[in-house]
Length: 391
Image (cartoon, rainbow, N blue to C red; front, side, top):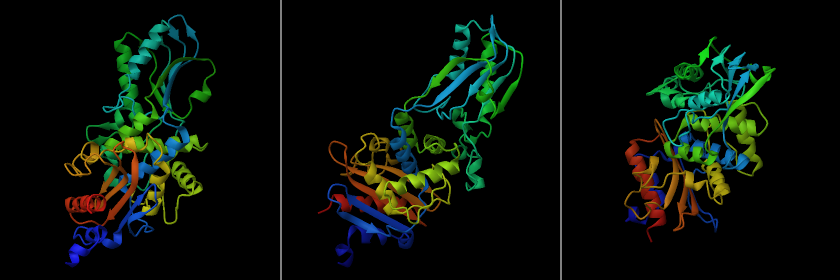
């Protein structure tokens, strides 16, 4: 009888897979403000990949959904007849979708460069293939990332020029710029373009041009489409690039640390409670990140009127990392959430939706020190079903 009388939250916290002291919950009606469930809402905990919702929300508000990444190509030197008397300079714009094997697909920039050279009648480069990496500063990966993650494809860093998601199979590629230059040079030579020099990668580049000609502006898909792909697949590279882009948008250096500082300050200025919050990266891979359910709930509420934002999150029972969660239940397709999973951690942040797929309730569930992951997920499912569906 006592188990029957307990609330959905009490039954959830009583699950053997849940550590009550390391778990936080906050579920709130967005219209009335009524709190349906709350536990440890001011306790700082590890967020894992629900950190991506924070990063994307900040950049979406700062730059809007229609912004794009630009990768610009110049002839660094005079064009004389069919020859560039100088280098071919590629200015990295941080685009994480270059050569990526996922949505949103972009045209092959190497083919675009060859087409641009042919348009100018250029068949010879009397210099080097060169990449300007000055857009970003600081290390590609935050120092707090665990060493065991750095060689994995999900642990690759964000560069001024990213290529093929900076991965080869399941392994991270530390020098995507070199991989790209090798690929570009091979395609150019195959197209009959002679390159007399070698390759160079460095921060000097665009600022050093004395006599240059713009050849190409490769433009990515809209931020909104890149953000949707990031959230559906939980792509760390995309999220880390967004954090650097946020720093640049706020007039700071394009470093991870600058982005994290700006993100914290931004949400604090927006009135979101930040006590106990520590932001280290954009993806949530760092185990030094800390958020509270109150902080995450504040962001969910702040973004609930944005028509794009909720659509970035997988629908329960239907998409991405939530394809099996709540499937064939009353909440199938009526919950949109970002998941976060690491060893000992399972988190959710997002919304309950109405018939028009508009958010009606914010949902934050942060579980640290969990036991069996499957049991923790099931406990979270039951919490939501009992909160929203049971009389």
